[in-house]
Structures are given as C-alpha cells and as structure tokens.
Length: 323
Image (cartoon, rainbow, N blue to C red; front, side, top):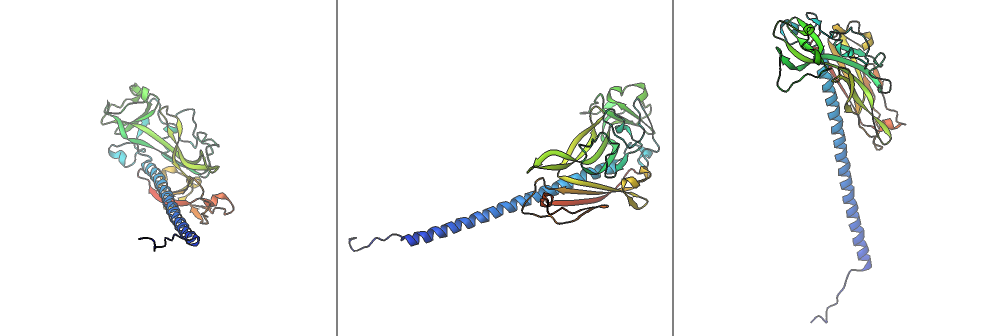
C-alpha cells in the first residue's frame, strides 16, 4: 500500500534556515529578558536611592525640630531653657565648639542645643580626621520623649544605665546626673510633677563607611551619639550620602554656621543631602550640577565619579523650641 509513496525529510538548506530562525528567536528573547532585568535593577537602584535620601532627611529633620526640648511641663513649653534652673551631680557643661571622647562634657552642653560647623571638623576630636570626609557638621541636643521614670517610679520596660546621662525635669528646675547617681541628694526635686529622661546629643557628618564597590570607597551619613557610658559613640545611619550642607535662619536671613552669632536666635535650618548609589554604572554618565547652599558640585566626566546616579534632597526645618 505504501509502495507508491515517497518519504522525504528536510534538506540541509531548510535545516540551516530553521536553525538560523530559531537562533534569532532565542537571541531576541535573551535580549528582551536582559533588557527587562536591567530595567528592574535600575528601578530597584533608584528606589533604594530615594529611600536612603528620604530616611536620612527625616532623621536630620526630626532631631533639628526637637533640639532644645528640655521639659514637658507648663511654661517651659514656651521657652524651655531660659526659665529652667539646671544643676545636679553632673550638671550642665559650658558650651564650647568642641567634642572629646574622653568624658561626658559634650553631651551636657544643654545651653547650646543647636550648633554647627561649616565644612570642617576643627575642635571636634570625637570625629577624627580619618572619619571626617567632607561637608558640614550639625549638632542637636534634646530630651528623649520617652520618660524613664515619672514622680520617682520607673516606667514599665525602662531602666537606668549606670553611666548614661539623664535629665530630671520639673516645673522650674532640672537635674543632670548619671544613672548610678539618680538617688543622690543633689539630684532631688521636691515638687511634682517631674520625670526622668535620657539626654540625647547628636552630631551629624559624612564619613567613609570602610566598604568599597569596584575598588571605590562608599561614603555614608554618620552621627556621634551618646553611648551607655555617656561619651560620644560613632554610628552609621545611611549608606551612599556624599555630602551634607546646612544654613541657619536668623531674623529672616540664612547664614552658614560660621556666620551665626548667637545660636539661640536660629529659627530654622535649611538642609541639603546629596545621595549617590553605592556602585558606579559604566553605562551612565552624570553631567548634572548640584547646588547645596553656597556649594556646587559637577561630576568630572573623565573620572569614575561621573558614573554614579545621584539625588539631591533639601528641606527647610523650623525649630520648635527656639528662644
């Protein structure tokens, strides 16, 4: 029955054409997949960049707004420090443009709840030259909103660290003491209400994170904070922050830190935060000029610094507790 049929397969030319078409389709699919992968990676990179910038800006803004907050009671809300007599076994330390890691004096400079340095770390030995990369330094001091104790009773879930600095806030007086000295006579306030709070002091700056990508160092936003010993301790906050700049509003005008005469007169702070990706992208060239206050930065297209994606964030932050 099959004697009259001729069985015929594909010729060599047909196989070669089919193979070529198949290879073209596979190549096209690979191109589409790789393009989609690069788009996804770029989207994730930009998303991380945005999240880092917003997080850093929020941290700075919150601490600037809270600077000078030293009591939750009555008339002190209007002018927190001017109407408050502060003593105690530690007491406040004299305000000075300095920071050392050997004692707790920096954290107790409550008469200067806001302070800044303009493109330098001079006098701030707690931020050594090896840790300071570039940009301004901003200092903010205030009480932790969470009370450790009220009217002599420790709140649930709270405790005192022996060497940490605390502030006992009353209606018209305050006491500064270490946790181990909280029951000493010098730290007692006879009137009520009163509450004990940890004293917060922060100094924001840009530093080298110590990490690298493609052999290049990664900068970041850091701050000095008070450790459990009451002394400055370094902590990293946001990776990729390349520069920070601040200007301070006094009588309706903005000044750099070295142009501020009386820090208690500052009414608002203008913040600039320049954030970049951790790793350079050889396929991208950044030719934008970034303006941060009286500073401008344009990446050098002949260097790898031009292959980072960047975003500039800025905000004006009012001082809630200004004099």
